[in-house]
Length: 479
Image (cartoon, rainbow, N blue to C red; front, side, top):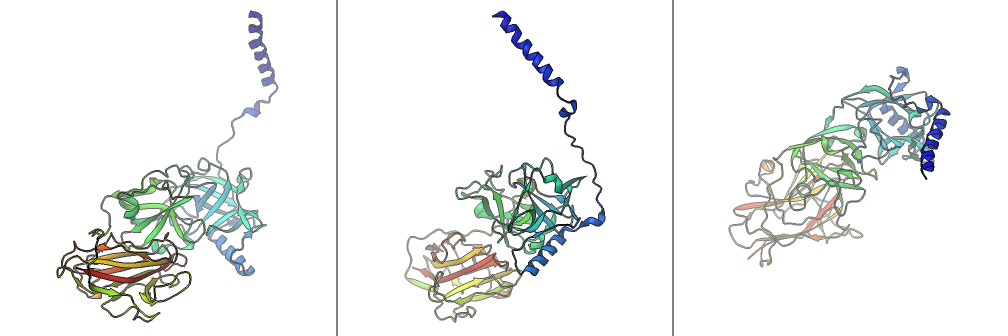
């Protein structure tokens, strides 16, 4: 037994010596990770924006708006700086780069079948991309490079990654490009941008239903939250992957600025703002820009006295809402509330009031529909009822406000104080298409003085971004 115990480790020792003596010493060298400045002819480098031009030319020549283009024999490169990071899990097997570390004007997404990428292509790393053999097209709405597979663009294999991507020695500090929500455009996708004076909508970021970035029960794949400008009131969709490491972190409650990447949603329909991780969200101010909430609750009874009502049956479809004391005011754009009637999948209730920005061609649309003045001191037990419906509201919003200091002059609407009637239910984008939703029996009994009740629509006019809201059967009762 003692002899066997001695020979077993001795035999193993001899075997190891034999194995190592048969292996060439250079087989165990540590891979050379040193980055050497590439020698690329400046004349062979084209702008990232040229890729979009080449793609658009191909789509025009083929009369196919979904065409993709494979690049061969060009001997050309593009050069850019990495602006995405997959370290936080919000990006996966894709690299986004823009043409300049500051004041960029073009960016591109590169599909790569490798994970992680941030250890090799860190934020700010300058990268040269050899174009021959790659295919350019639109993937989820944004300019993308990858490998052709029929009519689709797929990921560059990990084995071939360095055949196309060449790291430079430079790692730049990326400066976010300041823009507004109204500046969103296809050309600005894949750019690192800054939105100033914004916050998450109060229904997402504060109160009893304070949401996480992407860990709510109904979140699938990419969770969407509403980001709003405190300057213009316009909103944008902030998206986070449900695979992100920080998905269960609560949204910041404050107000400030954020640096993010402008992109599209998975379907390439709506602009999205997204971040590599929450460290580029700087919401340091507690001074939110929410309107004051006026909430008397929901009343259990409805009085028989009608103070104001309109079912819009005397309006002319296609014409602006007029008469009966209404103020139909355009704050921005060219669209206003108009009479509407329809049957089919989204029927109106006879004749309804409708507002939409879709297809307007305007950079922004804000429209108000305001009731005549109501004296809330002249009686008791005031309540409000109405119905709303939408046809894919998307990025547009409709909210209900009240003012007791507006003087009735349209020129002074914006200088008046408007509080939001938060108890009223207004249809949401995820409500059933074509259905009508009651507001609830909104109690107005806590309001004193005389006031005006207003519907305010905000939209950008972007196609496939702004939908339609309809409004009908408004009745204000009292005891």
